[in-house]
Length: 233
Image 1: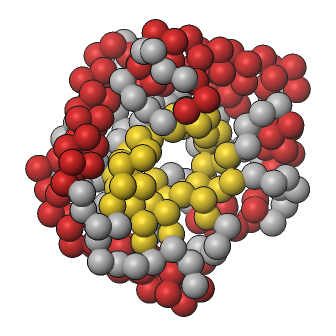
Image 2: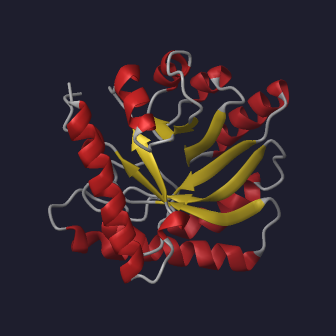
């Protein structure tokens, strides 16, 4: 288990790196949300990280969100960041701050139905497979506009922006073009002025490449191991 001091030091380091990357890009670091990716992280550690400044938590699995959200005694915001199965949507509630992984019509329909049932508009990001890797989920860039048009009339979903996962690399500079392309897509979509679709958020960048993502316009970075240490899944 990570020590209190390690946790505090890691959070301070990540925040400092975000601020430095924002400065290089002429951005305000306050515009960038640091999202703690808490897959396999126990509630006790999450509570400590909240006390050190991580107020948003991202869970990959709905069942983990349900379990932890009833235990973590902090006024935190919850994100769903992993591939969301349609049969798990029925467990989502009004505490969900943002869903990062809308990637298919069937999921949009399930979210719409659940939102109608509980009287909630789910804020979502559309996942885009910018890299084209067959192992990654997401809408192909060339299909993004048509997908957004097809879900824009769903009143219990509010698209707030886009998300992508860059290919794994030991050389972060190699994935800069991925983040740059997602930013361009968001600008292009914003210019279309599609009803119920906004491009306020860009969720991109993880522990190995978040500084590059910030330089290219990320508004949310999803950080796990750089905060909580390496984990065995």
